Image 1 (cartoon, rainbow, N blue to C red):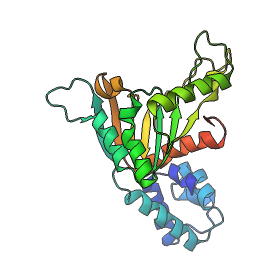
Image 2 (cartoon, one colour):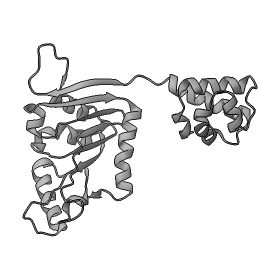
Image 3 (cartoon, rainbow, N blue to C red):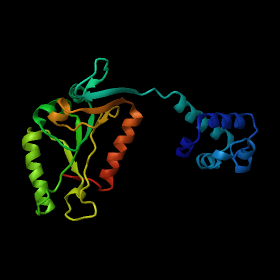
Length: 254
């Protein structure tokens, strides 16, 4: 059915009408789709509906069309740090981040290039973990210094010690922390690469994505712009991206 995502809604409806009134025999054939004016999407249609009888085709098309037409409209809010014009209707970054952490009841995915003042910024997230057993996966950038010739394991240990002393100073519970191992390899093809994403996904529904790091400056003083998107489909796609990195070993646990 994934190939049907490439077919526009009017074409799906035209296809359903043609099948229902008997103009298109099933299983579907390219020559018949061409006769119905659907040659431009015949490959996608045949991939998604190959070898199905008429009743099965109708059921699948009914589901796909309903999913398209019943989809709730995502709510998108502008999130902002810094000076604001008089007519601004943006929401404050620090307020939004605190609200997201506070409302979490199941799981949180968080990625950031830089973290500081974690004892204040991440306290609501720790509280959610402690009180509601919220599961947290945190993706952090770890960079080898310009003159740092230590092995990756030593750099990771230094980061771990600093992070759990200053940014997450609570003994328990702790998030699962991941890093991109490419950033630690000296002189490698990927030297200079960074884990630069800044986003939060709460309970598979609410996503904050933008330019702000999880630092005091980015949350309170810089000029930063972001979007708060309340949409389960968008959240699921972003989670899938990060889960794919874990599954394929592109990021590793700290």
